Image (tube, rainbow, N blue to C red; front, side, top):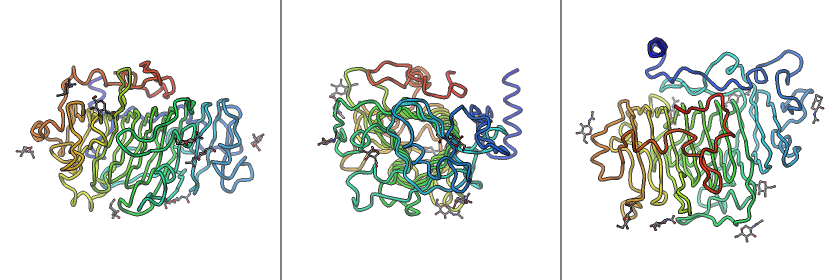
Length: 409
Ligand SMILES: *[C@@H]1O[C@H](CO)[C@@H](O)[C@H](O)[C@H]1NC(C)=O
Ligand SMILES: *[C@@H]1O[C@H](CO)[C@@H](O)[C@H](O)[C@H]1NC(C)=O
Ligand SMILES: *[C@@H]1O[C@H](CO)[C@@H](O)[C@H](O)[C@H]1NC(C)=O
Ligand SMILES: *[C@@H]1O[C@H](CO)[C@@H](O)[C@H](O)[C@H]1NC(C)=O
Ligand SMILES: *[C@@H]1O[C@H](CO)[C@@H](O)[C@H](O)[C@H]1NC(C)=O
Ligand SMILES: *[C@@H]1O[C@H](CO)[C@@H](O)[C@H](O)[C@H]1NC(C)=O
Ligand SMILES: *[C@@H]1O[C@H](CO)[C@@H](O)[C@H](O)[C@H]1NC(C)=O
Ligand SMILES: *[C@@H]1O[C@H](CO)[C@@H](O)[C@H](O)[C@H]1NC(C)=O
């Protein structure tokens, strides 16, 4: 019965796009708060919700960062943001739960955000812009380019360099325990090509969930730093070079990777040796890898690598995902020809992917660079509860994820 119902939905989805996302819809937790209301903008929102708008006398603040800075360190808070383009850098250092709610009618109508294809694009009504790239090392660290940074201190959010990155002081506290954003775009459009690291978001020593959000940049779009846990659901991540990178744990569900061109790899991860068996890495489940438009699609056939090892402990898995023809048949690549960074601890893998860009034979012929997993090998990493850990390694750390969309098989 279930199977029949999903076949019917799949068939009707096929009429609109070549490949439909699983049709179970967006996170609707804040749909009443998010929809436009007549008199009181925060109708349907949790009590005490702050309201940000650029030009509405009812607003508590005209900038999002001013609203964030008005909050205390630890109590739960919600901020509703009116439609508009906000040009500002956001920096969340507080420990208490914080939810940024973008005004939108999409969740109310049950409309997903990420179901774009090569002929369509999407944008949220609320957009935060900061155009900045660390080209020619003009900044001491990539963190200074970010549209949104979630982390307790500046040191905790630094990318650093070398195989282990910046040595964050041991006594640094954990940052936001439960940061969330719904229906917001984070755009860093410094130049329309890779011109140095340009973060749309950075999450370090903190937990962050993003629902129906967009992340647009060209290089290093999404950074998940040390002890960072990030969960993305129904999102679009656009980039060209190494655009999912970091040290922490990132799980992307039902999202679209919009390939603006190809450089480096889609994923570039640095593993860390810990006393416990960690699961740091990037896990992509039921996503779609799609060229950002038909013009670029024609130029990048077979060219986009799934990833490359920022250090040899890189771990990433593309699971049950659709690859358009842009994806390189062999899958992953070594870091560089004289500095491959691939050894027996490198784990760059695929599992049950499909589509015109997926070629299992070519992956198996990659000389061990791309690992094609069987069901047993993927099991330890399959669902969010399998990979997210507390700082001390305790597994099953998912209470900060919106439980209405949490997938557990
Ligand atoms: C926010 O604005 C609303 C409506 O003007 C007001 O009732 C509320 O007290 C304000 N909240 C804060 C924290 O200033
Ligand atoms: C925000 O910027 C985008 C892209 O430039 C534009 O399409 C959109 O209309 C703008 N939104 C508003 C509310 O001005
Ligand atoms: C974020 O805010 C903290 C606390 O004010 C500050 O130390 C840090 O430099 C800021 N981070 C960035 C990237 O600006
Ligand atoms: C940040 O790290 C640097 C280098 O380790 C250190 O000198 C500095 O004291 C740290 N800053 C803070 C605020 O802990
Ligand atoms: C297509 O995508 C490329 C790369 O993302 C961009 O530079 C170009 O402007 C886009 N063309 C159209 C027609 O949208
Ligand atoms: C982790 O340990 C392995 C095996 O000892 C070593 O080869 C590798 O360089 C270490 N990596 C890091 C990032 O410390
Ligand atoms: C990787 O190779 C090294 C040296 O050849 C060996 O000592 C180690 O046990 C191997 N590790 C794994 C996970 O196979
Ligand atoms: C897949 O890769 C193999 C090995 O490189 C190649 O022979 C084959 O033609 C490819 N298949 C497709 C459908 O491109």
